Amino acid sequence: MNTLPSSILSIDISKDHLDTDGWPVTWRQHLPNSSAGIARLIRKAQALQAFVIFEATSVYDRALMAALEAAGLAYHRANPRKAREFAKASGFLAKTDRVDALMLAEYARRIPLRVSEPACPLRQALNRLLDRRDQLVTLRKQELTRLKQVSDEAILAEMKALISVIAARIANYEAQIKAHLKAHPELEEEAKRLGSAPGVALITASSLLAYLPELGKRSAKAITALVGLAPLARDSGRWRGQRRIWGGRRKVRALLFLAARHAEKHPAFAEFAQRLQQAGKPRKQIRIAVARKLLLALNAMMGLLRQALLTSRDTVAGSARRAGAGL
Image (tube, rainbow, N blue to C red):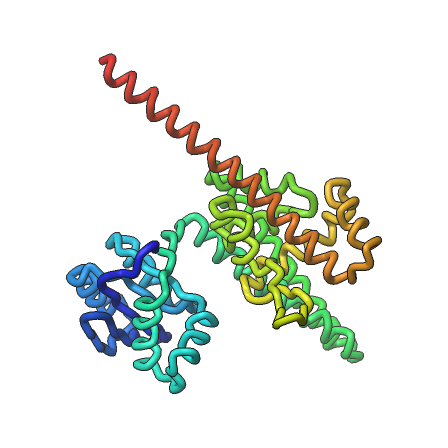
């Protein structure tokens, strides 16, 4: 948002409850995190014409977001770390659900916040498939580690059988991901475009679509900060500290690091990586720089694709209007 909202409704979300507050109208409620509780909250937000703020949770905010979007209400899904830093700086030292709701109202009142983009159902479905695949990959990795610690033949056989089952389930989810993309041509086109970049395979491309929907919609500076690949200064007076990356979306950053490891061998990035190596840069710093360069290339690529799609839609709509006018 470019200006601070005139009315705010803040929500602290837990698995079972929604604790609310607001500004300038105080509305302190302890509602169930259910369809009934959310419906009551939506009615109040509509009556106040309020800007809604809540902290991001892993799954407990999904029903609320869907209801807010269906009602056409603007909201901000706050980064928990940023909200906590604001709380400390503002003197909110205690931490309870009611205090957090009050703090979030003050946060939205004091800090100009960007309206969160509506979640795309197709990307959310892709997100769920990828999340489950990642859980199974982690489970397989843990079981493979335990396999090395066992000598009993019967237990080894049982563990290997379990690993085979997990591998089959992973393959099944990867097939579902491919089918989901194929069923939705626009997503498939975006995945193909991302997959044309060095080091970006199907799962990485799909994950970028699911976990970084802002790709192609933000500036180079904004997208690197969002992912956590922007080097942050640590200077004081004449002292110049080492620049470090910090914060951002850890899952996306990890994917880009893996992609960067393969991209470094591609001519488009090999010369850049070699130049940094010759300059005496540490291996980790080179990997970060390549990941950042790859992210910027992907962001530019998606920006061009989105612009082309918008132009195509405008052309089709214009043709339809002209055809209608001629009837």
